[in-house]
Image 1: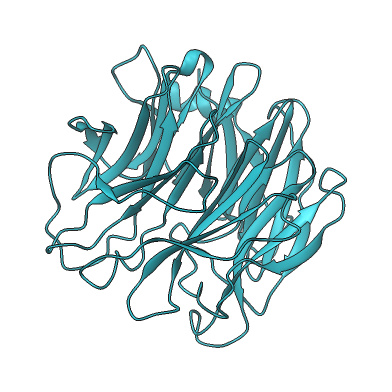
Image 2: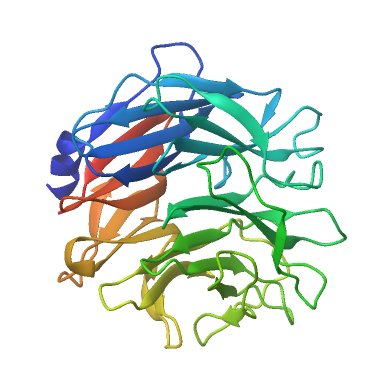
Length: 349
């Protein structure tokens, strides 16, 4: 019954026909506006809601590239600043996929009706070719971080914008692993809290383990603290699980993270032991009204969720992939996922 109710409440966004598949949805919210971006083939698309996610406009094409990084947490990201809506994505021109790629930003100053840009964020050409990145806004700042290939081994780099994505700062190295590389194909996650502090999470490759680490910047992305491991356990693995995680700040200012270790999803408060939720992967997290933590993930092919005050996860959809979750000002929490080339968006009570 929970699954049926969820599907009835969900907004369904699907292509008009043909072989086009809508993939990798991402959400951002400000006031009553919810911004949605996703990829389809070689193109980036955008749709907007002006009623806190109850309905969405027909998707419009933002940009197209010869090669667009898409799938397994690759794909466009969206953020809303005071001056613009900004979409970022890794785009290239060479074959095969991953032969080149720059992290680029497109911006709209009219609510998403028209778009300009394609401005490169990485200042070393083709260094963002792995295609995995995060972009967030907060406190007048736009922040992007990505897996970078400008030197031997994967490193984590970042850049900031103070003018709504029109221009970007010189790139800053967030972390270089003493092993020579961080995990090669797990997406990073970024968060800007209410005090303007930047938090960045990634999967490391250190001492034979693939564990999640976090670093912080208190000076607007100019410098970052040393990486700190999350959780007490470790995942001994000589491979990349292609799975990152999510970050959230609760009402008391505590930093929470969600991520996968082996075949289990864990929730962790920074500096404390992790708590196992259940078997799963591809997890995301957000805070909601009152600062409580909401979590979504995929388990046995189903989209699952857990809300504050309910220790038992519920099924949102019997089938789906790569769920995302955000808080919408005004007391609503929205989640989005893809399923067979369609996108579903619904509130979590």
